[in-house]
Length: 152
Image (cartoon, one colour):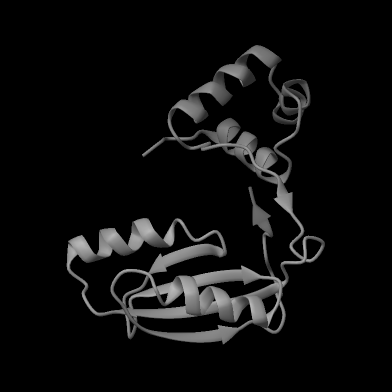
């Protein structure tokens, strides 16, 4: 685990708000000169704290405002089956998030499409065809109250 001091925490906070800030502006905001900020950024990147920089996209403007959450139950939950499912689900572009769940089902997927018709195709042709899928149950979001958007 990385031991971030208060300045690293400030850097992380500022970058979370706006990853396009210049080194000079970051330095100004955290109260350091540019060189120490550059060194801290490289250390945060090398440690894996900062995994990358991405654009936050507006799904509505891209025509991708239909969100469904899919509960997935698998027929087989032994480790090889889980690995096979994990690899396959990562290849489905409409699956924005996939979480293994401890509970009544095995996985929870966040699926983003343009509309219900497209979602039905994704469910029928892609999700239901994933390895070891025994059953799915869909919950459609009526409104996104808090959503970070699409990260690419």
